Each structure stands twice: as C-alpha cells, then as structure tokens.
Image (tube, rainbow, N blue to C red; front, top):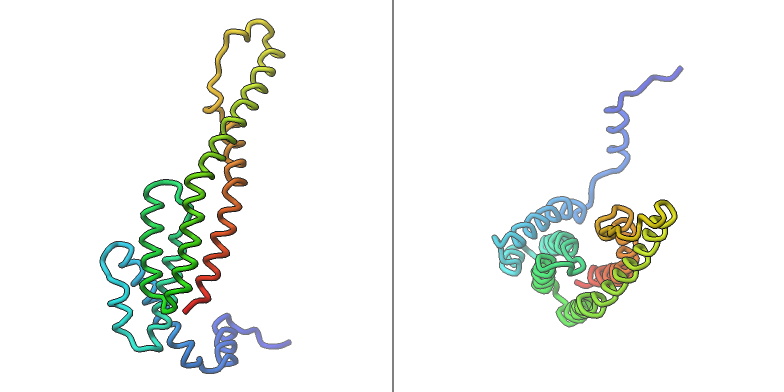
Length: 197
C-alpha cells in the first residue's frame, strides 16, 4: 500500500508544481487589494481617487485601478431610492476618475445614466400600473374565495389586499421580472466598462 499523505504534503506538492508566480501575478496580488481598500476609502469620503492612484508607478496603478473599479462597479445598482442614486453618482464619478480612456468611459456611463432615467420615469409608471393591475386581480380572487366560503356574510368584509403575504410574494415576483431587463442591460454595460483602460 502507498503512503498516505497529509493535507499539508498534498498542498506543498501542488504549490511546487505551480512554479514561481510571474511578476504580473505578484503585482496583482499586492495592488489589487490596495485598490479595493482605496475604493472603500473613496466611498467613505476619505480619499481622492485620481490623487491616490497617481502616487503609484504605471505597473502598480494598473492593478490599483482594477481593484478600485471592482469595488465601484459593485456599487452601481438600479436607482430604487435616493441613497442608491447618490451611491451610483459617487461610483460613476470614481470610475471616470480612474479610467484612462475618458471618451469611451463617458459614453458607457452616459448609457447607464439613460437606463437610470428610464427606470425612474417610464419604468416607475410601468411598475405602478403592474402593481395596480395585480392588486385588482388579487382583490377579485380574494373576494370570490370569500363569497364561496362565507356566502352573503362576506358582502361587508374588507380585506387590505396589499398586506396579504400572498399578494406581497406575487408582487415581488412581478417586480423582479420588470427589473430583470434593466439589470441585464446594466450588467452588459458594466462588462463593457471593465474592458476599457
């Protein structure tokens, strides 16, 4: 029978088989987390991105910028409330500050802003219409069920449809469907933005 190896021995064999890390890998391991920390400080209002990134040499700044971008892009979401709108603006301003290809960056960020404007305007109207339609449909079903169960006693009963767990669950599903198209386009734009230097 062969020798049984410890987890440490197996791990050491795998590390030895990998060989030495490249200079790029070392730079990425060192500076990507630094960029992520910098983005966190920027979000808290404790750092100016352009100033901080300029402190690093060209090779390091590539990974610093990538780390900053990774965090900032995660902060871009649908503008469901004022806090999300502020977070989006801050993240988009930060991305503008660290990306070198300003024209392409601005073009994609402008498209994102158009998505946000549509979501807040036309999208809001669509969500309100869908909510009211669901409320009426659900109300009719509840009324019908009450009639079947209670007969004429149900005539004076009023139920707040919006507070019913089943209604809330159905609305959540409808809302997810309505927002999915916005999220898909937003994710595509984020992917395009990631390709820009």
